[in-house]
Image (cartoon, rainbow, N blue to C red):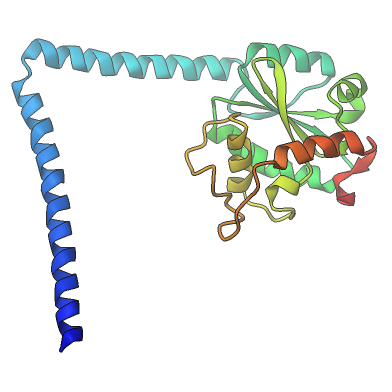
Length: 226
């Protein structure tokens, strides 16, 4: 009997919480409707104009990004082009690749998808054999490496697949999360929960580890050796 009473009490508590939540939602909606009802025509017109202006700005920004080569994953022919590209865009992801490294082709597939989804970021690829000076300057020694450039300065690197769960089968969402950690694209998920490690806590020092790895390896050792 005591068990039944506990269940009944628990049910009543849940029911009361649900009713209170519903009541709060209804009150909020009533308040918003009341605000709209109390607005005169001028106020409604101003609100409409404000929203239209925000839409116009968003469309203008989109067109500006597209005109600068955002929205597609492009190959640039030389390191000289790299400097021009990063100068004109606030956020840039550049994939330093080599044709003979199969993991570069895995990255390519994901970067094509992300370039279409995240217009705010420019996505490029550059053959390391055409950019010896740049690779030396950026200390790129493991292929593939993604250089993450913000406001014309290289802020971070994704070296090999270590940050992506250390597997060739990582998802596009995992790469998106990793780029979001460096604020190189607008990530809408939870940065504290990597898609590939929902059960394990992920350390916050992975970026530092990777930068040490960059300096510690020879240029011609592909990430296949990781």
